[in-house]
Image (cartoon, rainbow, N blue to C red; front, side):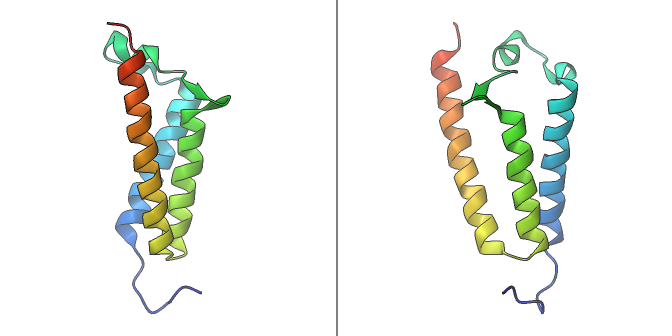
Amino acid sequence: MPSYNRCFPIFPALVSLSGLLFCLWVMLSGGEALCLTDGCSLFQDFRLAGISLWQGGVVLFGLLLLTAVLRFSRLGLVLAGLALVADALLLGVMLFTAPA
């Protein structure tokens, strides 16, 4: 059970909510306004096992928001760390698969 005598982690909750809303917006709108170069259009619709990375972002940031609301800070930290590792791996994939 979480300890309810701690203060509410407002900053992690706001960052998670911002990430959730951003991923949701790009997923629903296509995010063409964000793409300033031709390079980002290569990976705009990238899917992993049939799942859009924007859909994954909505789920991830939703889980991070839930961990902040429930004050499960250690679980949120582990989840954020795993997401950072996955993001670094995907960046490596993009670096080695992008055309010159």
